[in-house]
Image (cartoon, rainbow, N blue to C red; front, side):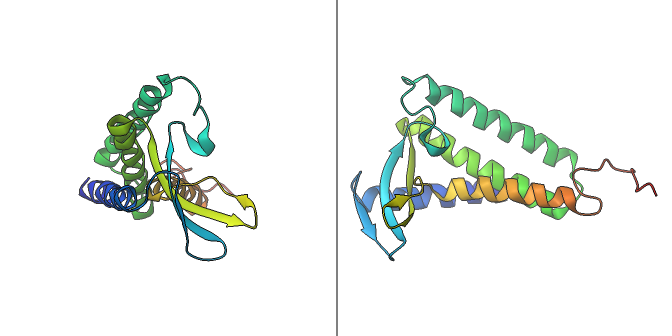
Length: 158
């Protein structure tokens, strides 16, 4: 759980740096396809539920805490591989990083803006990278021999 706390702390530190050095709504061009921005997202991914009236703050926080608690219990019971452990830890750190924002300021601080010409991917943050990367890692692990998609002791039938 120390690694998840480290990821959570890293996420919060970078968000603090962005929030203290870049006013909300401002952008700094880094490359022709990448900006640093300061955006507050009261919703979920892609600003889903952003205009829902405020109830989403607590609902999304509850989901983040519930998922993190479930993954922590699974880690405590033991997982099949180091890759699964890394994925669970990343998901916990990322989910809780966004929960802290929602509970502290009512919205998630996003600051990474990828774009091509006038088309922008919705802004995101390090916690989002942890969650999405961890989900991708879990999908990968499920395809590996002995992966998450197979129960312990279950072999291949030929």
